[in-house]
Length: 335
Image (tube, rainbow, N blue to C red):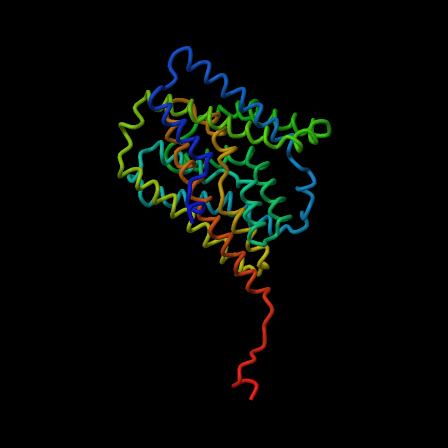
């Protein structure tokens, strides 16, 4: 019970980064060093993402196009429509930077590691989850900036799409170069998963510290009340609940098998923190970035807790379905 509801250690590290940024924000020359370090780390992160991309995972199960289309539709269509609908229904509930962050969250691709892990625990279509989650992250480099631009314009704001060159230079180019180097570095990356994980998490922690330092200096905590934070928690919970409901029961209505339903539910309801924070740093410059990534951090922890419980529930139901039926030997049945 304690493990089920305990926070992810990575989230604890992110909260500590926010605390340090609140107490000792990066200023002056130190802020310049932190900003440059974050940029270098993001370039290295996406280079290593390219190195780790298993092309076989994209080919594996690619003929199951209905599964992949359902997951991608949930990720890049359902979520953006939900976010835009909530923002239109209650526009005054959150300040503009948090609404931008919520719309950014809705435009992000799915997670990879946790989607595959939960699908495996629940007894779902793991090969399909690998292919779809990988394809979602690859497409996200191209699709997320476009969707974010459309959503923010529809919401009455806009992001500087002139930052597209930063996407190409800091994310896309390193990713392509990394994938081209996969024949030489792929085995090394597979043998050094701990280093890869450290790079992932270290990059995000640096980016979060940099973002919240600028936000704190600009007065972030003076503008966010407990009422606003409670509203943000409620909206994130609503997004996750609706996404899980639609992916679960929608897959049943479309005639997917139980294994495919599990893959669709877990891959289609998640949003990536590993790629989301670096993307936010490229797309959103200035002190608002701290508020922009706050919805993503809340949603990330929420999805881990809820999906862990849901995966165990699927697993128990699967074991019960596979359990042999034992004939009754009571006196009333045997005569």
